[in-house]
Image 1 (tube, rainbow, N blue to C red):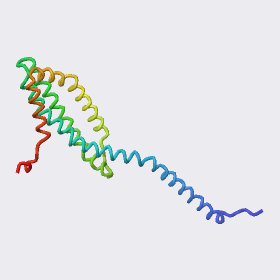
Image 2 (tube, one colour; image 1 turned 90 degrees about the vertical axis):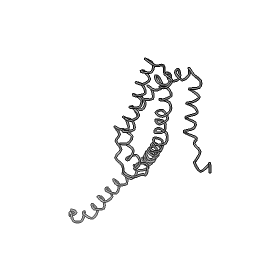
Image 3 (cartoon, helix red, strand yellow; image 1 turned 45 degrees about the vertical axis):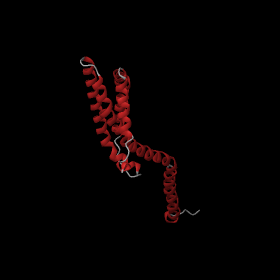
Image 4 (cartoon, rainbow, N blue to C red; image 1 turned 120 degrees about the vertical axis):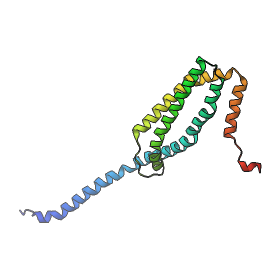
Length: 179
């Protein structure tokens, strides 16, 4: 009976170890397909968020601050109603600025992510933005907008003026259209 010497087994062991390493790397590679769809979805969500925040949310805040809030304040009855509206307008405006500040912290990372670049995205800031905006919208829908409807609804001309003002803001013809 002949015993194999360690030197004779080493080449085979090298192949076995090599295969084990290859299989581990292939197992890791096999994880990739499951990660591609979520990565693509993350890029898509980031891109949509960047576009939406700049094009819709900032514009919405401007509409409220330049058109709605002044119209409601101008139409509110002097005294307690006007004071209440003023406090609400101040709260909503302060919330706009706070939300915009959170967005400004998030935007650079989201822009990189949208381009498929490595990015540090502050998950806590996303949670903060979503939570604060949801609370802001709930307050506005439950408190300010019904009061605005009541105040502006007292005079059809006030509601019409707000509608016209918003229409003009969003449907401006280019200056060269008149040349």
